[in-house]
Length: 425
Ligand SMILES: Nc1ncnc2c1ncn2[C@@H]1O[C@H](COP(=O)(O)OP(=O)(O)OP(=O)(O)O)[C@@H](O)[C@H]1O
Ligand SMILES: [Mg+2]
Image (cartoon, rainbow, N blue to C red; front, side):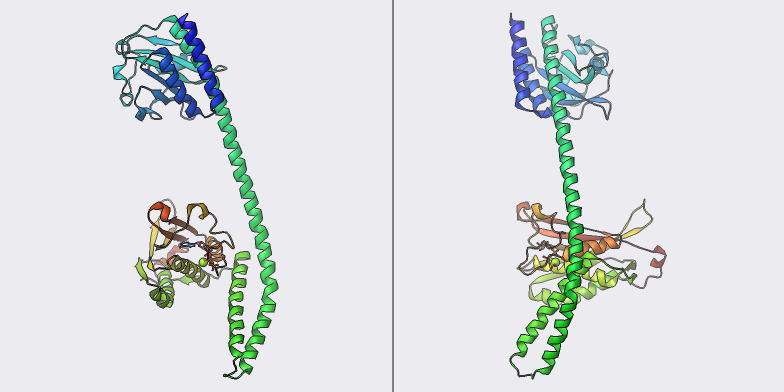
């Protein structure tokens, strides 16, 4: 009677589980718990078949050490568990210490358990894993106990099969969403590129007309003419618009790169010197750690534009002062013939929140009241045009420290030029 009741309880409890969750890990955790209780054993563990690795991996246990989960891997035919899997039948051993087939994995701490009942998990002939129960005291497993574990195994196999199906559907769905997102993104960028090109083109001529006319006006006015300040204001705004149009164009059509030899350390020094007063007045300390660099072939003006934007971004991130550390060095990749020059700009400013870090390269993404948001979009396209890459890591107050590190890596083109480099520092 007891046996039938146990079986009923096991079947209904595990059946219930399957309707409650579709997550494999959750199901396994509950099954080992329920089975150990119903069968009154010290240990219940489930191994799942990993076809990639061709082994059974311990996935859940009640009783063995949790350190062993995901680490113990048993090949089919190996030990008693592996044999049950390979032969596709139940194996019962009342004292494993006296069984030469037994294989003991120290990490599990199973040396104190004597009896083992091992039942393969199968779904339509396909091996899914193995479920084991173990006891400290030597025990001869009765027929009804074997049947009970077999029933449980049957239920569990179906549940795992379903949850794996469900998980694969979820993965496929996620991949689809990602692909869709990328497609939308690339479509958006292309459209934005076209729009920017048209817009900047259309703006350019009227802007230069305005500029010419205002300059003329300014020249024609007396020094004392109080209207002159308005004309100057107009000129300043025109300059600003000019800059934006220039950025837009750069983003839309990065244009030809005029390669020339560039000593990057020198360029960095020049830019920092140019901005040193501004940084001083904002209590931002600049530190440099520049290592010898080979001369790289690059478009000097464009790289300058990149460096200026990164340095100004760092400045804007430290409204209450701070430190900007600029470092440079060469990375040698053994596998690749080319060396890579790496430049890093590390500030201890407010940082970029994790949820927007993917947006910062998007054109027009800005958090500044008078920012345009084209800086990093242009930086990225310029660096990529040079065959390099840019990446940004950032911490903010939620991380317990804050700051941003911008890294630029550029390939050293034409290595033979390195030796006669005129730009060694
Ligand atoms: N070092 C940094 N620390 C904190 N936030 C940064 C840093 N660099 C960039 N950001 C964030 O990324 C945004 C986008 O930067 P980006 O340079 O593209 O545009 P911007 O500086 O806002 O405007 P502009 O077009 O004038 O450069 C910034 O508004 C800022 O929020
Ligand atoms: Mg910027």
